[in-house]
Length: 459
Ligand code: UDX
Figure (cartoon, rainbow, N blue to C red):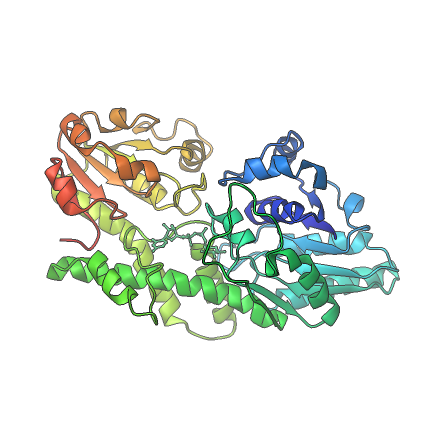
């Protein structure tokens, strides 16, 4: 199938590479010159495990262009995967989605049928608006046009994006037209039936079952995306709230999570207590959902509380540091991990950024380490002024991070932080304090290595 994808961000590029791998003919429209140059050189502008290899493998069925008019007229299916950044009031800004729809409608041929799919996470009702945008462009062009608009929310998890796209739990399609549903069913046939040969880096999981393609109306499909993300966000916030109480009553939240997770009605996933969620989705989507609710005059106290609990986790880490160091002024703190989660260089809404800002404001010196996200964090923390934070240093050397430091804070559970040489690090530090914001270590192990250990919700 000939496909045009608008936007080569995390969602657009992952989808493009996977659809090209499934032998579709894929053209990606990307306007950012830097990204486009990289893509033309065959390099991925995003860090995602396996994407570079797969991109190289599909070179013959994928192409990149800044020009909608070059690829849309010939396409059967057009997929919008542009960003929906938060507006100042928290609502998601859909102007890029609508602009993309406008540009597509400008170049659609009058005598062809197109399926226009919105993959970006958008407020409920956006698909209807997109259909109206398309209709108004057609009327201005004086043509009838034949475009079916459909919602096909994306559930990708950064760091696991390709795995998730090849072996999804489900595919959700929201459409009012049978033609759109049929086109999407043909698009995803190799995934729905698992007829493709798995890429060597992504073998099919042995317990994997064929995924259902759920069809529904567009508004419900849009709501499914927000509801799914909000539910996962509140599951994490719930266990973090329990973790806080565990600290007061000397219980261990990892044991509690294990105990409740064994109940199949609860399930054991997304019950890891710690510094809570960051990233491009949960903070933005919970806030956008509250924006949708506010517009409808509806209160969502559970979603509000999930956000409150999440962001106070960051403040709790600072309080823990204060309680052991007495003052933060003049102290040196090493930060292990800048990315909002492992296996990504994404620092959007990362807990690390708030913690570092708070420490600097309190007069501490901060050294920060991350295997791949240093550059992005540097940019996020310095704003326009590269010399803004004179007490902030970045290092790729964990020994240098620990040397003579007053405390270490483990912020992101990168695999390499699971294998730290604790004994050696403790010896190098001025005071061997480890605040484990992700409960990577068992308190007994860290204490045996010489650390004063403080986790989240643990004894
Ligand atoms: C999420 C959804 O999982 C995905 O389906 C959706 O499309 C986009 O949003 P993502 O933000 O990439 O994906 O990451 P996810 O793995 O869900 O983790 C989000 C945050 O929650 C991370 O900061 C992670 O550290 C945190 N988390 C996750 C916890 O604190 N505890 C957990 O048990 C799980």
